[in-house]
Length: 581
Ligand code: ADP
Ligand code: ZN
Image 1 (cartoon, rainbow, N blue to C red):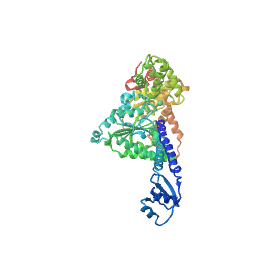
Image 2 (cartoon, rainbow, N blue to C red; image 1 turned 90 degrees about the horizontal axis):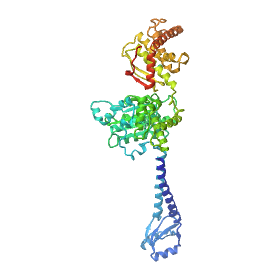
Image 3 (cartoon, rainbow, N blue to C red; image 1 turned 120 degrees about the vertical axis):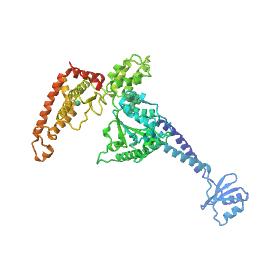
Image 4 (cartoon, helix red, strand yellow; image 1 turned 90 degrees about the vertical axis):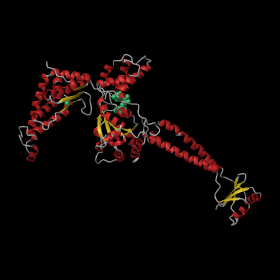
């Protein structure tokens, strides 16, 4: 885009040069006029050669002959000079004679310079990115995107969470008539390349409304006030399109909506505040009936300014996760669909690409296609994917954790299986809804989600069982890999179990050291806390032994869940069936 603009800028540059030349020529070269003495001038008068005399207050006056030639002569400065000329039927002008050609080229020059300035400012200041950057919104036909939910493989939960938005965009009036308040803003968060942009485009595509995309970073690094005015411009454009509806997508929202760090104030953050405020103002400015939804993407939800996340703003948050094995298979299928493929074992490739994002899988398939093409091979096959795999890994391996070592996957799988198994055993009324070894914001290695029972009170036994579940991860690691090979993966679990046991002993009157005494009330007394720590430790230690015994008795189930996890990466409630030996 920039290149094209640079080419166009040559046109005004060329015209400017031409006009500059003309203007110098006409205004200066031609201005050195002939001079005739006053006597010759009087001669011309009597010969009736003169059409106009330009009387000014300068020592010389200009004379224009009937044949168009102009010369200068001395200004007689007599009182009746003008009258005597008029009597001779000569027109008199009190301006200097101007040369149309000179004026014309000066005007041309000025216009060309303005054109250069405008083009230069446009191409340097407004980054033209993506199909619908703000600067060319009016030039691009803002029809809906070609994307729909079919364009996204996997990500089922995320798709499900935006379906009502599509319906709302189609019939905003219907929702308004029920008094239903739809979210104005939706935040999609998750690793780069997981399909956040794709999902936003698909929402616009499914609803058949125009899609406007900008990136948060486009609003930064510009002069103060420009970012804010661009936001206003963007909303104006989105509202004024023929349908009146739109999906506005803001990538990298954190660039404008990052948490403000208190105290520190730099020039850049002033600009950011202005931009952010403009965005919030625009968002509160349109009402629910309008059918405009703003979707924003970020890698980290916790980095965002809470002001952005309040109700009526970006109040729906959807996590877009890295694909698990079955999702990866679908993504591979999708991207191989329209390509000539030979002997490819898609299932195996879905396995090999663990921790790959959708974008990386797309990249892999593309590299393989390029290789096949270079070789003039009949089709793309396993060998091309093999080579492409090393290329893609070599390019990414150092940058992030794409290629987690097998042993780490195994540790994560045993650890999570430990949590899940203990939970199934000691808290049978809680549903283990999901267990995965795919990292996300919920856990760097993997995580186990369970739906707690809805009780007003938690009893002592329940709290003890919660601690058991929390310790299940570490216990499984120790049983399988040995006491010397336990890992840092239990860090968070231990924090939480410590906190529960400490509260039991010091707040809820469930321990021995303090009995029914409450720690907060006792604090002024400077009592011996060692005793309490000792009790908490003994308590946790004995629970830990209990957990290990439980897991040892259930080792076959631990192995089963782990193997299933390693195979499928994500398990749901129905996958978790325990067997007795
Ligand atoms: P993000 O916005 O999360 O960084 P994108 O939406 O830009 O990611 O994804 C980049 C590309 O990766 C997409 O254009 C698509 O080709 C591919 N991709 C990512 N996720 C998926 C998916 N779930 N299904 C199909 N393709 C995907
Ligand atoms: Zn854990």
